[in-house]
Image (cartoon, rainbow, N blue to C red):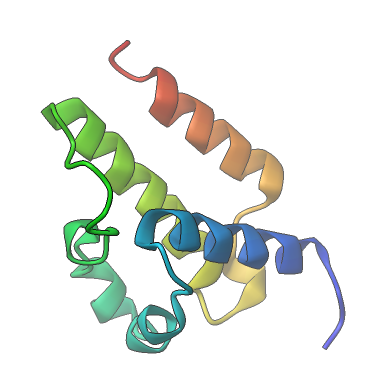
Length: 100
C-alpha cells in the first residue's frame, strides 16, 4: 500500500467520526461498505450520546454535513474516489458559513 494524500484524507474522516461518535468508528466502517448503506446512513444514530443535542435545526444540518464529508473521506472503498484535503476544507468552510 502506497502512502498518498488519500491516506491523510482517510485519517481525517476517521478522526472526524471519532470526535462525533466518541469512539473509533470501526463497526461503522465495516457497516458502510456498500453505496446503498452510505445513502441510508443517518448521523443521529451514531452521535456520541454525551454530546448535547443540537438546539436548532441548522446545527443538526451542519453536523449531518460534517458526517457526510467524513463518510466521503473514509468510507469509499476506492481511495481515488475520496476527495482531496483542499476540497474537504472548502466543503467544511461552506458548511460552517452556510445560513450565517
